[in-house]
Amino acid sequence: DSYSADFNQALVMRLSEFIDETLSKVDSVKNMAKNLRQILDKKLQGRSRSVTDTLFTSEAPAPKVPRNVFHLDLSMWDVDEEEIARQLTLAEMAYFKKIEPPELFNEAWNKPKLRHRSPHVLGAIERFNRISNWVSRSILTETSIRSRRARLHTFMRLLEHYRNLNNFNGLLAVLSGLQNSSVHRLKYTWEDMPKQLQKVFDDAIKLMNPVSSFKMYRETLHTINPPCVPYLGIYLTDLTFIETGNPD
Image (cartoon, rainbow, N blue to C red; front, top):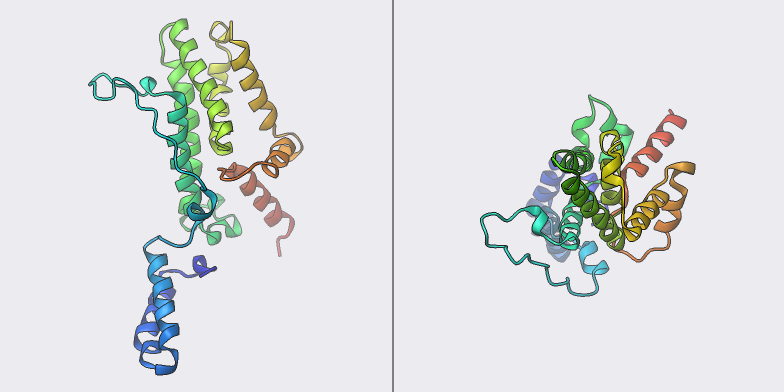
């Protein structure tokens, strides 16, 4: 039950056949066969004992639904930033939970011939890049300084909510979009930033500073209360250093 990730499809089929064709027909181990079948079925259905039962100790907050939710002209920008952060965090957590230990072996995500072994790692990386590109594109496609400034402030508030939700992966994805060179050089868009939002941005930059191998982030990660969505890239980098430093 604890190492189900080590079982590929072929092993699962063999185990299933062994349970049904051998164990279940032996009186002395029928109970064990029944237990194994229940565990296996649980795993196959994706309903294993998971973080959802142990980390979430209170009910989910009521969604913040926009007033014009049924209007045809509803856009994402009508939704409260906190609700956007919540939904994006749930989606990122779903990606993160799908990653199985074997996907992290041998730097598979970095090697063309082995990439097929890390589908969920690659999916998480692609999502990170999409969020980052979405942030920068949303600002750059606005045609006036006022509207660009409004989008920028929206993402600043999104940063704040990500931090409150302990979604560090999403936090850095938004930061990457805001630090895109095309966005960063919009001098007039960044002018007159409210002090509160400027502090949110500065704190996020400080927290996710890559200096000393993300020292501030690593220290913060050890002090927070779960649940959280950690920044995946730091673990991939650590694994790469381990593989490189121990070629044998």
